Image (tube, rainbow, N blue to C red):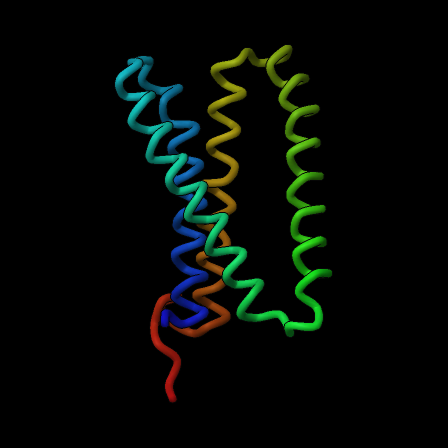
Length: 132
């Protein structure tokens, strides 16, 4: 079974790939490129969802699973509602293309920052095995 740091690293990379898949098609307005990048981003999105839930399952005591999953889903749903509202304002201000670019760039930046923080906190590469 993979280690928690390994699962964390893959989940954070999946966030970066998901964001790239959303934002990059705005730079090359070619339908085939958009299809491929949206497909890859969608795969990364699913991977991220499974891995984050796996981390919750592995790291949270069993008696608190319900609360942890509820808190995670509340935060995720709240973020989606905020994104919907902010996206409406941004589309009006910047246009759809640049709003979509920002929607992709923000998770890329957040994922890369989280990878850097995780690497610093865990001392070395995020996906390395912890000494036994």
